[in-house]
Length: 75
Image (cartoon, rainbow, N blue to C red; front, side, top):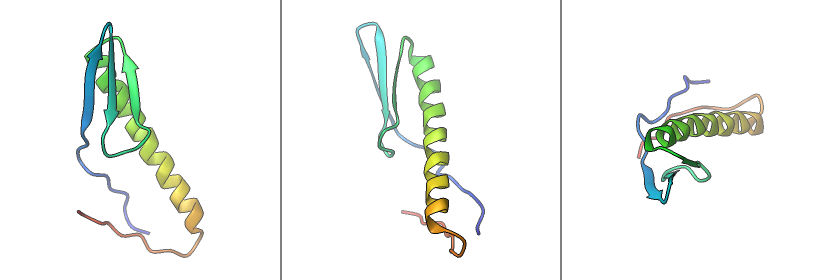
């Protein structure tokens, strides 16, 4: 098994809608949020992104079972 690595940056798409700020991480489906301030939204998106990546990793490792190769793919 290789060492866990993550891309260093993702794209947050954010906008203000009335009193709320809404945002989405463009590269990861399902990572989104809504907060009262821009700063709180950015922090919330970072937390959600980290949790989504970790959950997806755990699901992939579980699905692979015991005997697998792990490699980094760069676009």
